[in-house]
Length: 356
Image (cartoon, rainbow, N blue to C red; front, side, top):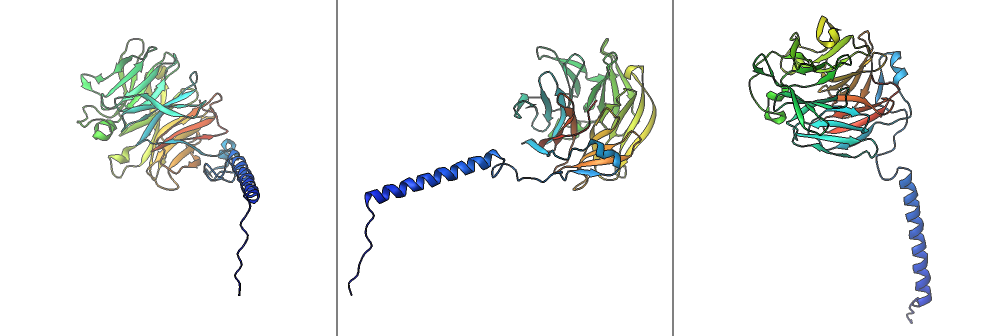
């Protein structure tokens, strides 16, 4: 039997084959580019609306939910992110990565996160005063500073009655007279991870700085671990998160409230606003309707994220987060977008609420 072989392809056949292959590859590349322009296969997995991060406890919460918006992880790489503050002129958020001893900057226009100030003296809470200057609470130096227009720091508070502050934590500014209120729980003095280690010389307290004469006044020490703080929309109530369980076993995390007098220079009528059974409330912010949006962590799945309380103290809803959330702020032209510092990452979420 004679064995026959298949004819060898001609040069013309090879050229035809290569041309067809190139055309097919171009078609596949075009399809891939088209798919990528639609958000897949690159990027996060598509998520069906409404997002599962919203959790309703009271029908009043539905007013603030948006059904066709996602939770966006803007950046990750921190060890412990805190202290976000929105700068409307620059369209950026400054926040602290405390263990890395750096302040970071998230740019609204580009979505990029870049180093902003390093070292930061292990800064925690940040805000901007009514003149646009940044205020920061420093753990390592146990002081409150204001960065002037050229960037140089001015020390606003470092001692009280001759003793060093513990480690200022969070900070707000009253619009009448510009009085500065800050908490001093001492977390930055408990371990080198977030500052330095030294005995606390003062009771854990809330203080007021008079911007006219620099006088530092203790407003209250009736709180075990004063943490995040914010005003109500009318500035007549001050809310302070008490993270007592971190150092007082058996205590529950709470939000306490005081009546504000003398443009923030005096607090009266202490009362409990809300109590949390698991985890801790940290940073808190109010919306224009008087609801409190509270960063929450160390409670595990189903607790970590953001808890929202109505003005009557009832929890009306949650934003369930994949990481514990320390602090938050409302950002953007309409202040309707939440920016959340959540452990190692920062996230954003559009809401139907409007921050104060």
